[in-house]
Amino acid sequence: MKTTRSRRPQPAIAERKASERSAQAAGAGKRTGGKATAEEFSTRNPAYEKPSAAGAKPRGGKATGEVISARNPAYEKPSAAGAKPRSGKTTGEVSARNPAYGKPAVTGAKPRGRNAASGFAEAMPVQSRGGRSGRGAPSPAAPEARVPRAPRSRPNPQGGKAERPTFEAYKAVAAAGGLVAADGDSRKIKYKTVSRARRMQLRQGSVRELQMQKELRERRVATTEIPAERLQKALAFTGYGSRRAMEDAIAAGKVSVNGKIAALGSKVSLGDDVRFDGKKVVLKWPDRLPRIVMYHKQEGELVSRDDPEGRVTVFDRLPRLKSSKWVAVGRLDYNTSGLLLFTTSGELANRMMHPSFEVEREYAVRVFGELTQEQISTMLSGIELEDGNAHFARLERRGGEGFNHWYHVVLKEGRNREVRRMFEYFGLIVSRLIRVRFGSMTLPGRLRRGQFHELTELEILGIMRWAGLKINGRQADE
Image (cartoon, rainbow, N blue to C red; front, side, top):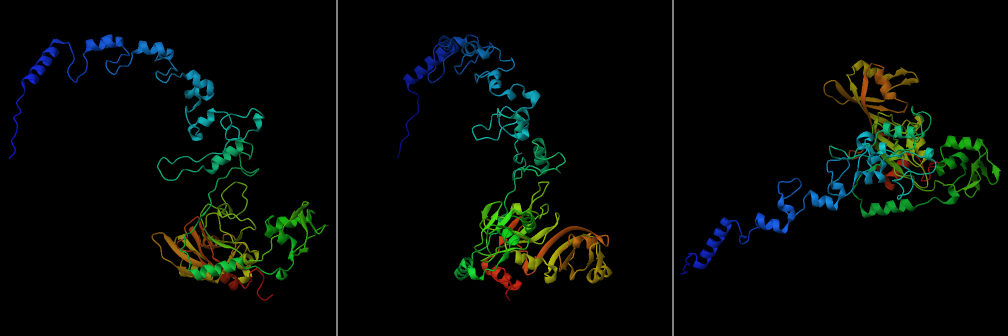
């Protein structure tokens, strides 16, 4: 068994502790392991003589206001305007480098940062748009030619994605820089930041499907099978502009073929020397499968290539093309969402849009109110609108809650605001309109608003056969 030792204090330790307690009571000496008393500390630090004076700190070994002011003259008047007690830099030194810092309360300047939303940009002069090294200083030459910066995104105080600048902010900046009038009608706004649409994620196909897609992607039409094409159509397919713009350029004498000024209706073949404004044009020919994109359009987007007001268009959201351009298959209103098709084949787009082919378009409609059976029969038989008779091929009830009711309607033509005008004929207001199907292509459930899905080569080949077209867009019976 273990024996415990007695914990009686030894005589030497007891005597030493008693002497320390007596010395502490007398007010002299230093305790073992403790701190020095006031008398000993004052002998080493003269600044400790007046612990109650302003600026003195009894402990920590830092000097008082008199010692600090001897090293830093700016400390002599800590209550004066512009003095900084510890950094050693005065407001005058900062204002000498930054004029906007001198009067932060008057000009609304912010001492640090370059955030335009905080008012700092209002105090600073208009900055130049030069390189990275000179972006903080104004350009000394031609001050009237300076262009104000475009507004930037600001952090969202509630979390989430950053707040994008509004259209009014771009409009104000453009008006200040002389890029557009205050009313926004004279010229196009220069600043527009639009993020590209995201691709819908799909599972990869089998090895056999991937091999077939690769073969279709690499297949080309023989040069002997490429027929002559109209000049304006060939230029538009190459990406020089729309057919109407190319017709105007040809009429103005800007296009020449084999050294001669071209005329409207002239055709070009593979190997012809075509020049636009004296520069040689390398024409693109439809010798492969076209590309088709399904895009889920959002409300507030225009189906237009150029908007004088600078609003967001669907072409700003699509992926870029190098050798051709996107052609929209039909249009959707500014407040209409849903399926919107794009292709690089003008023949395919014409086949799907022209009323003579009667390609079905299906819409989901939410209406304030409810249709009677008599009104449904009238819509199916025909309604006389301003631009002629219009009717639905099919109309189905899809339920609803409260005052809102959903309907699915099918049209075989695509006139401007046709669905809305047909419901307004009976005094019903369409609160939401979504295109869910165009021909044989249905809006996928996984395709969210603002996303796109590019069809595979096998799917495109099936659509070309459905439209009766060859790989290069020619009719199959030719």
